[in-house]
Amino acid sequence: MAKPVRITETIFRDAHQSLWATRMKTEDMMAIAEAIDEIGYHSLEAWGGATFDSCLRFLKEDPWVRLRRLKAVIRKTPLQMLLRGQNILGYRHYPDDVVKEFCKRAVDNGIGIIRIFDAVNDIRNMEVAIKASKEAGAHVQGTVVYTISPVHNIESYVKLAKELKELGCDSICIKDMAGLLKPYVAEELVKELKKAIDLPLQLHGHYTSGLASMTYLKAIEAGVDVVDTALSALALGTSQPPTESIVAALQGTPYDTGLDLGKITPINQHFNEVKKQYQSISAPIQVDTAVLSYQIPGGMISNLRNQLAGQNAADRYEEVLAEVPKVREELGYPPLVTPTSQMLGTQAVLNVLTGKRYGVVPKEIKDYVRGMYGRPPAAIDPEVQKLIIGDEQPITHRPADDIEPLLDKARKEIMPYYQQEEDVLSYVLFPEVAMEYFKFRASSGNK
Ligand code: CO
Image (tube, rainbow, N blue to C red; front, side):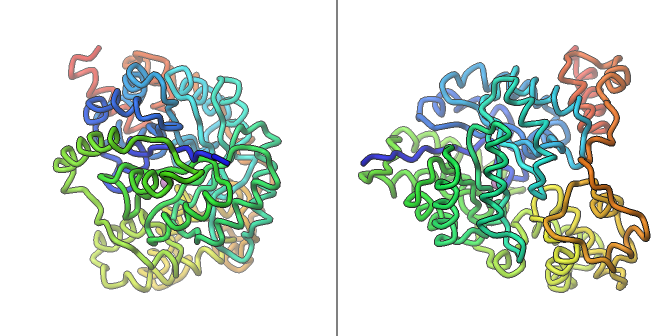
């Protein structure tokens, strides 16, 4: 019985976020966008994640303009984005008015599928985004962030997936951002999720540990409907498994994707060409087994190395690597994904370099312990909690309930530079970066 597997291509989002520090320019996308639209992908992940910040900050491009330009030529393939629930595309929680408006504008500007996740799998941080995206007319994909800990198991993932379905999600994604999911665990997880909920199931993996293609195959045999892959020019390493290899592996089987490698090859060639200009920022393609022992995602490893090098402490790397799982355990086993990976990484560096654990604690970690990022998967170590916030009581309600609306205030602040309603959202998410971009835009004559 034929059960074709569908493919989400990540070349315009996660692939270059993972390998080229999110720096792919819109021009390099536009040059090949129409051809990509002809492949027959299930969807094209092209927006969200770190691309929004990177557009404004490094490329001096308007991410909204990028989205509209892509949408104008990609007419058949749904454009997909990654959204961090109440964090939207930033690194903290935003008020509900901003979340609702952002989801609506994303859809209005061309997004068809919104994948929504929360770093600690707290459904309260996803519900407003899920409802707003549904209302805006998007296909909403609820996400189960995969990690390994004594409190994470198949049962907990099934429970979360059921809750996501109840909130109205159209499909479910297993998000394995660190490449930790092993083939036979994936088989069981997919089987149990398919048994428990009657929704399309998608797998998002990273090649970091060298397992992802094997994991995909077992997940496919167990009934997963869609997998995320990247064209081979930007695959492997901390990116996704190669599109062409997965397509080839399934040819002539009941899972045949039906995609034509003859059409894909010239598109990949385009990226092999443009790759040359991104060489200086390219991450190495290697198998990193540290992720299996420390559960630290690839992006975080390069971050830690950079932080240490910046403080002339590159020789403390092994100590920091060993400190991360300790911090994670003490803080209730949050999955390591944006923004928790950066937060815990910084705390681990401070614990090692200052020589006094939790002697210096950044505001983000204090807020996390206060419950302002949601409910940690397990209880926080009481002694560590005391070191961080003293006798203060963490909140138990939904974090965003405490945040005042922001849109009207932000609109007033940017009035001299205002060109479109989307500017208000860019500014709320990244105030300094967006303002700098607005000034650049005004001075470069784009009025
Ligand atoms: Co990813």
